[in-house]
Image (cartoon, rainbow over all chains, first blue to last red; front, side):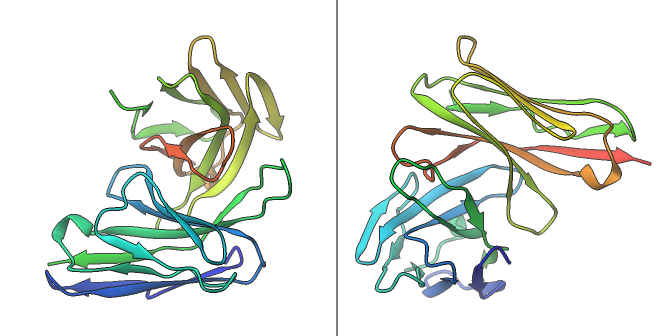
Length: 115
Length: 112
């Protein structure tokens, strides 16, 4: 599982509901990311974190929130779900040491449908 | 104009064929170029990684970057049915190489 676990794997939400996608990594890596992938499209960065207590926006952050209280966990919260948030959500982690550019390890994804 | 353009295919080839996958990009600030492979209903996995221009070879896979033309390629030699997947190009500026800009992916099917 590339050292990262995402839950739930599938979820159907009604418009206006809220939910949290969970992501946990066991590699003790500092950098973590949330991407979304719409059907037939590439991935887009939602939020990322460079360490516990530090988060920043990516390319498509609207409608989402994140927190990073521990190195292991990086949950993604959807407030007031909208049909446009129907997508597959991928969490990823990355080791960074100085100027080294580490590989991104992706989870298997959480498939969310908003009806 | 999208920052990264990739022909979505689908691309169907017979086993043993040479496959060429390509991406173009518009942002000259990109320094890191990657190819990810994504099997159906799985997360992407890193296949090839190149910094700046040049070629890189790993077994049956060769990645090429031409920064002057803003064009990158992935070649697969002696393609196998197990190569059937979606191939995503991705790029990053210097600084945070986890902040990737992806192409939309090319779906490849290798027929036995």
